[in-house]
Amino acid sequence: MSRKIGSLSVSAIGLGCMNISAGYGPADESESEALLHEALDIGINFLDTAFVYGAGHSETLIGKSLSAKRDRYVLASKCGLSPQGIDGRPETIRQQCETSLQRLQTDVIDLYYLHRVDPNVPIEESVGAMSELVRAGKVREIGLSEVSSDTLFRAQTVHPVAAVQSEYSLWSRTPEYGMLEACQSSGVAFVPFSPLGRGFLADTASDVTQLDSKDLRATIARPRFEPEAFAANEKLLVRFRQIAMDYSCTTAQLALAWLVNIQDRRLVPIPGTRDSQHMRDNAEAAFIKLDDSTIQTLDALINDSVVTGSRYTAERMAEADSEEDVTSNQK
Image 1 (cartoon, rainbow, N blue to C red):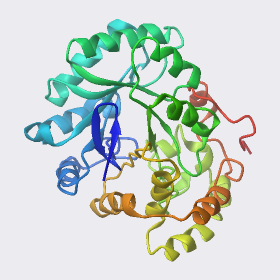
Image 2: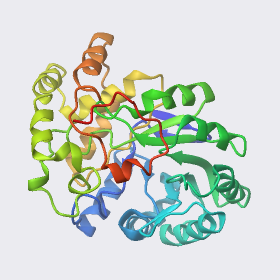
Image 3: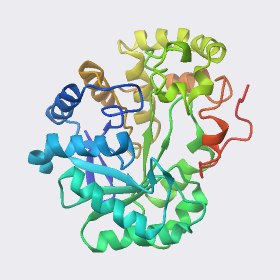
């Protein structure tokens, strides 16, 4: 099963490649390399990485592992964010693209996102630089990450935008406050990252007291994983587990199936994992059909209004350009 992102044909569920380097504690490089090869073998051809993941390690590992198989996968990466912070200046975008191409051992990046909007640089200037990369043959399609609808529309006056990537899952609904509609009306694909709620919807997450100090859930995504908030959120999983059992699937598969069933062939989730079986399960979720009643039940069961805690710390939320629900539960 495949879906379209601009001129690109991608697997209905991709692989987020932050986990293979960083974000959720230490990673084993040999296991990550084996996972990348297995992804291609089971039909996942859409790999999503970024300049900033593991301070370049994710891109380097993909290049090292898969350069000989470059024709078998669609490669997405991102610019405008580094360990030093957000920087959307044209000269930075050009420099980061060159560095990424070297790390990835490729001549072209299929889908190149602006990772975050730089508040000090007009979006038209950042996208203009990315458009130059397309004309130079170094990038095939342009995307934006964590942006508002207004930013998307402004960017499109400079160059066609193939995809928008933002956090989206049953428990993170920000894109529903304008972006999904904007993408649908503009023919832009939408790519949900963290579609499993950083492991919560996969029923594999722990509260912050059990996490590595470098785990995102213990740092920038901490609010929902604070012990009290996490205990409250876990209660939502009781009914969720039962629905998964009714469909003879895992909770992770159910969460992904909700995404691939709610809009007509426009959403391409990119769950990240280091576990081979989890990756296989994720890929199979594309073939699970949910009836309308189940979709509505899930929609009401887990959403922003019942989840305890914001999705990021206040400092990280301030960096986001995307729309936010003013009624979002911040308790």
